[in-house]
Image (cartoon, rainbow, N blue to C red):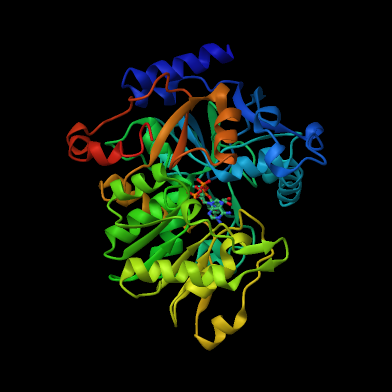
Length: 447
Ligand SMILES: NC(=O)c1ccc[n+]([C@@H]2O[C@H](COP(=O)([O-])OP(=O)(O)OC[C@H]3O[C@@H](n4cnc5c(N)ncnc54)[C@H](OP(=O)(O)O)[C@@H]3O)[C@@H](O)[C@H]2O)c1
């Protein structure tokens, strides 16, 4: 019954009759990419680079969760890999702590506390069912989902939902994520699927696009303005490929840092003229594990000035963390802003505070995006003003390999995952808008 039910849903959507899914039965179980609680020690003692997501991520048949008030079940056509999938797959202990803690809030959240975790923080798909109290969304609507999960029962999040004391990232700190045939979301995560995109293109931007929007554009982040020089680490990666577009789109001047000529070429293709290949330059910001080398910060600063005609960055778009943070604080201009949302290379940052206070610089912490910011970021995609940066797609069975590629930093832009969509290229509803932007949409393809 379960596979038949999934097949029926899939066929209805593929035949262009998404509206029909509301009258089809909801499958009792579905395929989901999981990590398992009884395997959390599988990588004990291994170095991070030796932890292989292909071993810890499984494709399991799991029961469909009961639908609660304010929620929606989504038939997932496509999803995407995010770095949080890498974190969950190589460090599975915290994930079950997240689920246990969430499970303590209410009988509804208790559903999330399971011995397996279905991961995934992006999706495009079709609303299958909505729970009590959901009026804005109806079965059959084609949607994408942002990954902000909030309760909003206290006062803290009512100016900025990211400040809710019970703020979580769906599919990372909650269960029933998007790397699965069916996902459970709060209905206030839903946004219209951009009509000119395929399922896999529509699923790709979500998490990183919203994050880059808040971090760079929003008043809650760096509040970028025209003419700002923006130093962007990892400029062709998940976050960076959107940050680069936001800088160009908003009249700023991106200085893109990447680690290979291929990645530099992608940034130039996006329209960025100022590119630094950090591998070719051979920066060594740390002499050894505990000692930074300010001469190397200066070398980076000099390179930036060489490219900009003597200007320092108004904004540094940070996420590599420990390895680059000292250099980022040094390189920002007087009065400039270092805006950070992550610490890929280590979260114990070290920087010379004299450069910060004497030069009146600011460090801003940024994390995902509120509903409004996510909506704005998705709206820009839907209007063809910002484009997906999908380079490659994998099948749901190959999710472990896809996560390994991101873990090894061998990818470009975003890596997609086909779920119920049997092949790439399906789901376009506005061919005219697509035709206008097709080159930009495909910019990362085959990179
Ligand atoms: N707080 C949030 O809401 C949020 C949201 C999204 C992502 N994140 C976090 O942000 C980080 C990046 O995510 P992503 O999706 O952009 O990942 P990604 O697709 O792997 O891109 C990151 C890029 O950063 C560069 N990089 C990696 N290590 C570096 C290092 N040691 N020094 C300099 N550059 C380095 C790499 O580019 P080059 O090799 O070309 O330089 C890489 O392509 C992850 O830690 C992720 O968990 C946080």
